[in-house]
Length: 85
Image (cartoon, rainbow, N blue to C red):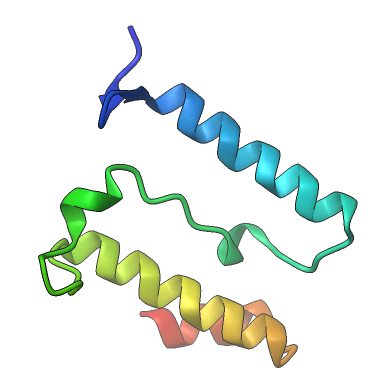
């Protein structure tokens, strides 16, 4: 059985995420597992003003932002892990 999120299966969402990563690899974009983020059910995690209401999503987004910033600035992963805790 496949879990549904907003009428779409999680498998389809994950497949789309994987396909996007493949495209990024094809165009030789720099990214890591830490600089990719799939937020399932994203519409339900923000309020009407656009603020994040889900604590776990907020933590994951902060981690992503730190990882992305460090990737752009070419800092080592150990630095990313220290700043996200």
